[in-house]
Length: 423
Image (cartoon, rainbow, N blue to C red; front, side, top):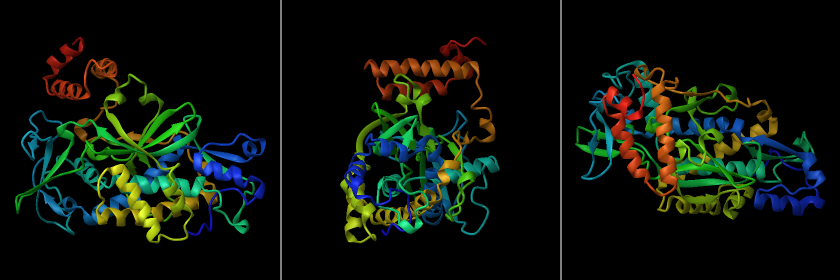
């Protein structure tokens, strides 16, 4: 891809070796020249922009391609009811919330006539519209970061408004030394999974698989590790960011609030609740991968670039990729690079709020789920105790998930008693 615009150093032969080392390691070389000329992009405030780029492609794609958004939902779904039915697609398989689909409703407003409320309908729609395509979404974002921030030949002298400068990422007040994709297991109860059932031909299929989950990981100096998760909304983990401050890039229309769950310090205490929500299994660095560097420095997406994209996708996924995933990733990469390049050119990232607007979307009958109550405080203590047991090898995540699910289904008075909450 031709780097007509970007954000990097002016060509300077004296610093060629330094720049090449930085592209390959992601680490700053400590010289007086470099320290004076390097801008630090704070990932903590930058990630909502990445979440917006992802949603601007994935939501329109699923609106066009996902069967559940073109067929009528014919059953009532109330995930907050203890009588909410769960189904199993196969014996001893995972349970999930059924979504029964009937005739085509394309072009009508009768998508879910039995919805408890408009807000419930909007939330289910967003869960489906942001389902799947995780590898094909996260890899282009990572490659675009390499291309537009860590590639050092991305600017023409005539367009260089900030000569002798470059940008690098910081996260949680420390320099980023590596980033890429981590594959693992998200711990999700059956009530928060979706299972679609096309009733006309009796054809069921599972939605997104939490046992095959992906995140962007970010490592900083000192080997601290953080995560950006763009795939949990479909599991009713409805943490969102407001995209209003970032809508300047002529991207496709998407929701005003989009999935974006940044796992920062408050979530990553070694014995904290988050340690029970995700189990990392396989890592792939994108910043340090020669294939990402080749893609970033190429002039177009020729056969070699596509081969590198496919190779990286299949390595982290541990399987062969389907043609529609490859097409999705290739097209999305062009869009992500264009948006990031424009941002680097204008230095608009300096205007991003250091405290992005984050929310947790709820249905009407979930009002106040984020408010502190004695029961919720007791649940936090309960989860932290279990996290310590799991870390020490005295318990398993699977057993915790089972115990937590059973606890949630108890009558409130019994649950409060087990948690030690006085009525």
